[in-house]
Image 1 (cartoon, rainbow, N blue to C red):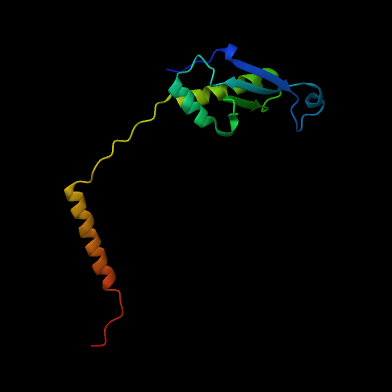
Image 2 (image 1 turned 135 degrees about the vertical axis):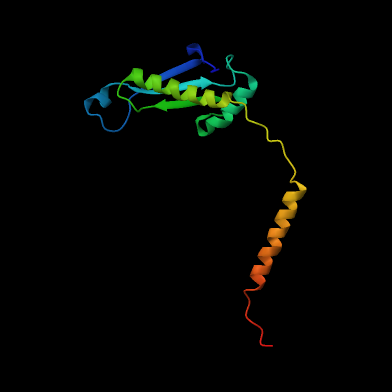
Length: 134
């Protein structure tokens, strides 16, 4: 069960990418910056929002907006799709509810085995000393 984010909640800005690419990189705005306002999103539940904000890390602004920059591809459409896919992967990961660890206590037999192993190890180590001159 994957949470789908509606396109209306995403905001795209296009800019010229840096790096190699010849004339194309100098005149075409192919790089994409996608903004997703997590705090005001109506498509996510509160627990998922909290986990998503924690997962976003440095991509999250102080206003609760996730910024994703996509510059891998040479076309605007592929970079846009890449940004959406990366956001969807984050949301999918945040949608998984963490398993709560139930603390358990060691059994009596395991405590006894541990103590027996410690004593046997101690006796091995005590036998390693220098021989006495008696």
